[in-house]
Image 1 (cartoon, protein in one colour):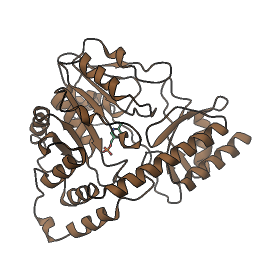
Image 2 (cartoon, helix red, strand yellow; image 1 turned 90 degrees about the vertical axis):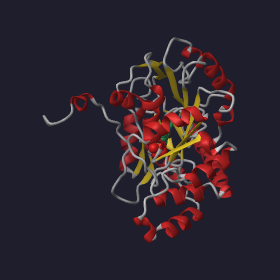
Image 3 (spheres, rainbow, N blue to C red; image 1 turned 60 degrees about the vertical axis):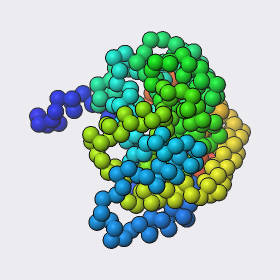
Image 4 (cartoon, rainbow, N blue to C red; image 1 turned 90 degrees about the horizontal axis):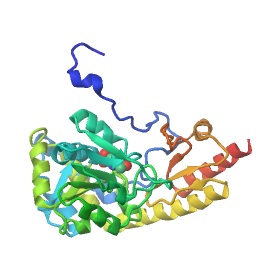
Length: 353
Ligand SMILES: *Cc1c(COP(=O)(O)O)cnc(C)c1O
């Protein structure tokens, strides 16, 4: 604490990311990273970009990346906004679209960064409880509000809303921005990007951190009609005109040029998820249906914090949230089949003890 802080700093409750352990050899299933490396084409492109040209500023318009993203989604580059991680894109979205005279609606259990941004930017918000199955029920959002944000699939539950449920939400709020955070959509959901041309109030946010194995590169993007994107650009250019460096631009663009690798690795993660789900169920766990690269599971007879600590002592880290309604769940990221196998073996041992 310091008396030199701006007053708002005293009120902040910052986001606490999952642990990035300093020791190797741990099986890391706690932050939803992809177990496979990025496409070899990405690494080649980054190596080629590591040149004398680093003395030059990068393209402030991020043109080639926005074109590659637009091609992937069959949209127009003017409908694409890119940023240095989807966390940054979300931060800009909260300022540009979600700070309205009426409160912002969000699920009571969702990505932990949303309320943090509200604290930083002074955005009044109201949390809408998940139903008994820990699912988002879009009908519960039929109430006066200034805007809506939710993650689909939701985190940390993995629960997926159908495109028709998203449509209902959009039609219930024709005069409010509706932001869908699709960080995990490539692991089995249908993207709402296909609705963007129909709904001027829709903004869809994606990240390259999960399905494209680029958490270390920090690239995210949003897709919406051009008016929404212009609003995001205004905020971005009032803060940092060059958020994406040359290496990130080169690597991210190359990722969209290797669709084959992208589809194969997503399919492998989905297969491993289903195998892990069955393995956990065989051990007596209740596992929520997941459309993400993690599962959310509880054991009816064992304390989740105890299991997480037991796993940790065996060199396996998973995520446990000390939060009402979900404190008996573990969120387990999908690793390689070998890593998932080690997890199941360790859990079986802990359950026998
Ligand atoms: C991981 C995650 C993000 C952040 O992604 P980055 O691009 O790595 O900042 C955003 N939203 C949700 C729901 C996530 O799980």
